[in-house]
Amino acid sequence: MQKITVKPGAKLVDYKAYGSLYSSVLDFTEQSKEPIESLKGRTIWMINSTAIGGGVAEMLPSQMRILRELGVSIEWLVIEAKKDAFFDLTKRIHNAIHGSGNGIFTEEDRKIYEEVNQNNLSKALELINDGDIVVVHDPQPMPLAAMIKKKKNVSIIWRCHIGLEDDTDVTDAVWKFLEPYTNDYDHFVFSLPSYVPNPLKNRTSIIPPAIDPLSHKNRELQLHKCIGILYQSGILDDHKAILYHRYKHLVRRVMPDGSFDVLDAGKNLDLIYRPIVTEISRWDRLKGFKELMEAFIKMKVDNRKNGDPKSLEYKRIEMTLLVLGGPDPSFVSDDPEGKEVLKELTETYKTVDKNMQNDIAILLLPLDNPKENALIVNALQRSSSIIVQNSIQEGFGLTATEAMWKRKPVLVSNAAGLKYQVVDNKTGKINPDPTDIENLSKTLAYMLNHPKERDKWGFNGQLRVIQNFTLFSQLLSWLGTLSANKT
Ligand code: UDP
Image (cartoon, rainbow, N blue to C red; front, side, top):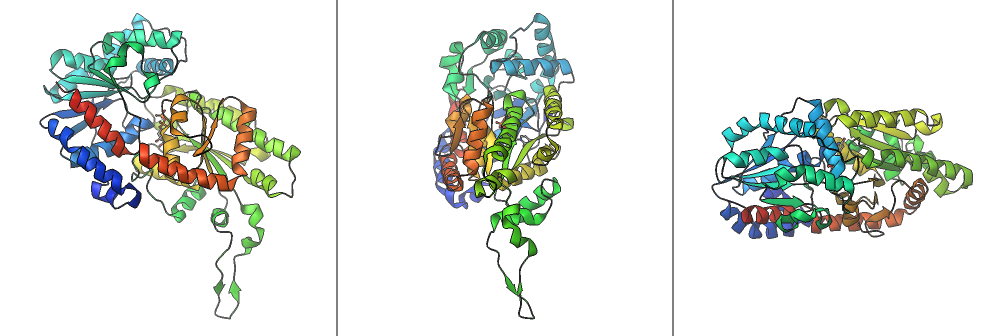
């Protein structure tokens, strides 16, 4: 069990200074007073299974910083698990909550599950006191809080970040496997009402995940930084390419001899206009990377077959790059499947036509340095014309919210969380079936060739995030839930 230190970062005054967030901060400060007062004298313990990578590790630090600034005592613990078998099992549980896998969980599985959690118990008991509130994120540490509750007078809450809208045999089986622990919990938090299994319905709050608009991943980033990152990752041959993409009409300069200075490549604007389509996610089959790559290839092949080489539409598609970004698997501790999925994607990539390979970049991002990783993701998202989240299942895709905050049009599947985040034809496009390559490729081409709509969707998307998905609306819901569920 490891206690994670949260570094200093943005304060309320910084958010307030950011024009579009001003009223959110004022409302939050006013409405949070009462629940915060009621939590005095207790510590909130957040427990999960990794300090880097994935949505939970992404959101906790900023939430904790704001709550601490307002006087809440809140800490973050990460469980230790040295066994591959444990993470294999918790990944199967994760997949089963999403409705995939065979739904078979054995007594041997339970033994592994409980043993790893039991190994973290003594350290947890040293730190946690009577009256505290323990919030467990996702399935990995679920038995631990139930064990703590047997020894201390604490309330325990399970925050489930995943879910499936329809019950299946597989979801029934996994909820049955988890029942001995859910029975001990005081309260649950899910992202959408439709994710809540029936037996937990009257003990659950709904809190959609949110982003921190001022984190390294979401804060404004200067163009030169974005260009630098694209250049460094090898997906741009030349710094100039993206500059021309942004600035069609170049500023000219009068030279000492009276001539005008203009950069040479300016003559070939059509050729260096390179829209970028990006999906950034964990390497997980449910994220639909492979399908996106196939759709992208199909779009290009169809364009070459049917398009008019002289038209702007043809050139735009011809010049488009696809970026598939995900964690460098050597840094991720709780995702054994990631390496395998990346290998499958790499194998498919190897079979792609050589010409086409240059238009596709599979990037492994350095998760060992969270700040650097966040800035790279930020730069990639900001340099993109379209952000895709082609998930086959998705609890709630933070990447789509991050993109919308950056005024990017999004192309998402209708996996439950995403269709709640994105409004079709208003903040982007919802493609009903992420495995329908034909439709995906057409929607991508449509979006690429409608830049005015893309601008409009990007603008609407940012507004939607401010109104619904920033950490302020989320923290208010959390404070309400915590103060209603203390011992
Ligand atoms: N992410 C990242 N680097 C990567 C892949 C993902 O920083 O290489 C981040 C991404 O920007 C997002 C989070 O990890 O903030 C993933 O959250 P999401 O809800 O999209 O998916 P999850 O991983 O929770 O299923």
